[in-house]
Image (cartoon, rainbow, N blue to C red; front, top):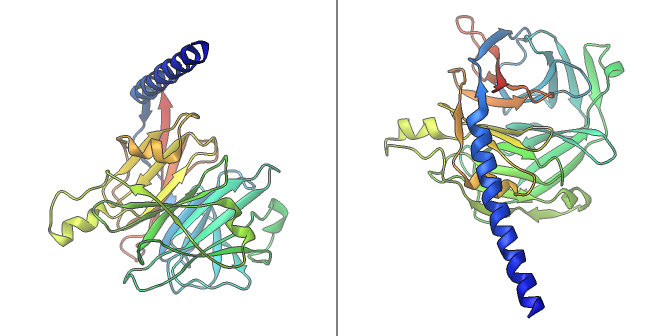
Amino acid sequence: MKKINYLFFLLVFIFIRSGRSENFINGFLQSVHFRDTEDQGILENLEIDEASGIIASEEHPDSLWVINDSNDLNRIFLIDKTGGGRNEFFLKGIKNRDWESLAFWKNPQKENFIYIGDIGDNDGKFTEYYIHRFKEPKSNSIEFYTGIIKDIESIRFELPDKSRDMESMFVDQVSGDIYLISKREDKKHLYKISNDAFEKNELIEAQFVMRLKFSKPSSDLEILKKLYYLTAADISRNNDEIIIRNYLDVYYWKKNRFESIADALHRDPLIIPSAQEAQGEAIAFSSKGNGYYSISEQVNPTSPVHVYFTKKRME
């Protein structure tokens, strides 16, 4: 009888705790506000001509790492928060087939890692994809215009449900597990790759987690459906906020420490202020978590690329 009572009260406690957690999140979201998006400046480095990924630097305050889309050289750029700067680093031994996303992780040893997702597949024709990571170069590594990154780890993986185009990737800041989201489906697919995959020198299969219910097109017209393609994602450094963008909106979730990434993304998001960018395909929280940066792919003499920042305020 005591055992039954114990289990009963345990289940009641979990039920109440769960309800309180959800109420806490709902209450918190009511107090989260983002200011209007601000233009930080025009991108100075014209070599960044098809920006597909961005992430805030930890080693270089108020700076951002940026990559180009497919067919660029195997390089990553460092700019400041206003779009200035021409530093670039070449990654030895890998190529840019279709780089689409950057991510960040600080491991338990407090080492900062940058991830590059070679995960784009416009025609759904690739049988395998790649994720590369390396330690973020420190401040004394950018005295010169060009640097070289040599120590790179890679994952070679396939999907469990055929080839898919992907542009959104982020890393669970606690576990180091990698999350990927498909781009084009009406109900996008969420995948997971364990952090220990970097230890395996073989082709691995990503884990299908679930279909997502947000960013669903409201029309069957192909030109309108494209507006709902998911193009970028990030998670805050404290692991409790997630942002994901399409060509129209930026979606926001507050995650408490008792729920998983999947549990958080199962809930309805908050749509937050954002810039209307031409082919916006990159987004990243600031390293301090006080807002997020965004940048678009398009660059031409009449419409240069701008860096935008949307600041968060609490009430």
